[in-house]
Structure formats: C-alpha cells, structure tokens
Length: 395
Image (cartoon, rainbow, N blue to C red; front, side, top):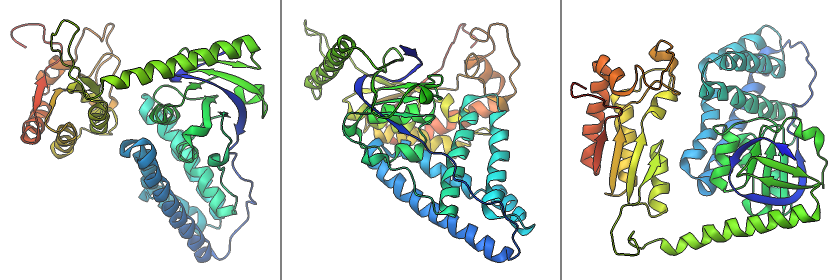
C-alpha cells in the first residue's frame, strides 16, 4: 500500500499505463543566421498558440470554461514580453532557439519556485509544461497522446500536466497516480472536474510500477495498491460500485423542492471560490450560493484586484445563478490565507488575530473598492454581503 494525497474522490481498479513526458534531446549548437533562428522560434510560438487554443476549446466542453483557462494561461505566459525578449536576446547572441528558450524557462521557473504561496509556485509547473511542449515543436518530437489509452487504464506519471490532461477520454481512465502535486495543483483540479479518482504525491511511484501492472486507486483516502490480491480487487470494486450507486441515487432529488420528511422547507446552497463554480451550483440544482470566498480573487493576483475586475467576477457569479441568492463574503485575509503583496505581519495565532473585518476596517480605501464592486454587481442578481468575523458592536 502506498500513501499519497487524496486529489480526487472515488475508487478505481485497472491496468497501469506509464505516461512519460520527458524533455526531448537537442544539439546545443551555435547560430550564425540569427534572423532565421528567430523566425523559427516565432513559428514555434505560433504553432504552440494555435494548438493550445484548440486544446482549450476542447477542455471547455469536457471540464468547463474555468478549467480551460489553465491552458489559455499558458499562452499568456509564453507570449509574456519579458520571456520573449530574453529568449530572442539569447538567440541574437548565437544560441540556438531550443537552448535559449530552455534557459529562459528555467530562470522564470526558479523565480516562481521561490514564492511563499502555493498558487505562485504552481506557475513553475506551468512553465515546465510550456518548456517541454515548445521543445517538442522545435525538435519535431510528437506529443504524448493520452486519448489512445484503453478502457480501464490507471494513468501513472511524475506529474500530469494540463496539456496532457486535455487529451483524457474520461470513460477510459479508471484512476490517476502521480509522484508530485497537491489538492490545489492543476492535476488535482482537472481530475476532480473529470470525476476521475486521483492520488497525488506518491513518492517514487513511477519507479515502482510497470506497464500492465494492476493497481487500485483510492481517491477518498489517498491510497494506491500495486499488484493487489484478488480479495483487495473485489473489496475496491465493491467500494467503487457503492460510491457510484450512492452518487446516482442523489440524482432523484434534482429538480425537486428541498423539503424534510415532515414537510419543512429548507434551502440547499453551495459554496464557491470563483464565478465559474456558480455554474456548477446551478447545474447541480443548488438553490443559491451560501458563501462566495472572495479571497481567491486576491490570492490569484500580484496586486489588489481593481474595482472593475471584482465587479466582473461578482456580476458573473450573480448571472450564473440566474436570480438565485448569492451571498458574497468580503475579504477574509489572514490565518491560512496569506497574500504576500498585502504585507501582513506574522502572528502567533493568525486565525484569531488581525484578519477579515479588522483588516478591512484598517484598509478602508481597498474595502470601499470591494463594496462598490459588490453594490454595482447587485444590479445583476440577488447579491447579499457577508462581513466575516464580526466580534463586537464597533466592528
């Protein structure tokens, strides 16, 4: 039995297919015709962009628009003026496009890896994915094609990158095991969107398996079993059937009023972290949003989100709920949600310290920006405002 992180709930039993997306080899040669080399690099960027747009469009159908934005973000990273300038500068000095681009990627990835917050560190994984894909285009190396794996496959990889995940046919994949990644990694987010059981951060898993080996994936407890006994296979097949059966049974409640057995009407709401999640709440027959955690807008940015950016997010959540109540919480920063650019001092007990409403009342200018955005968005739906952790009359 191997322990990891429960990345996506469910149970899977199947045959291992190892997915290797190794960096292609290339000759680090000196360039004399730098103009031609820059054109070759620009052509590769154009090919990457075209292919990634197509992959993102396909992902919108399979996992939703919000998750497809992960791939669209790769285009923004690749075409970043800083990345473009540094790469082309190296080419102009006589370095081949492959070596110039790899060096630039390694520099950017190193900067992201030094960040304090996990979301920023995740960008290093994105850079790694972009690097391998661009080097494949430059060297003419074919991509990994996950779409061709047979039914009942357990995918095993060092890391399952967004570009690899885009090709998954969910009916064919019984489970996912990776050597790295956490609950907020792209591999976990996409596995949950596809409803495929996943266990992540299983140390040395790629070296422990072989193609065709039987494996069990327990995405509820974060366990994978290699070469399971028949008794273990039967046990987890039964768990899988019960899990899917219980999930299917809940469908009978879709479209029905939420009423207790003795006739008391209650409201069933869903909590969200971004506007796209509201679509899922509505699709699952939720009667409203009980909590929109707005700190995720701030955690994913390098500076305070503007009034317009916040307004668009709150408006989208309201419109996605089509008139149903949306309760939006004002910024709850502090505790386990440190945001580096806010410059908060470390506290012995941040969960009860300077956070939430106390932070907002000490930073009234930014608080007013959020409140104005919320009030503007309320014209597009039934928005209510929750103020977190009010502890006294003055607050």
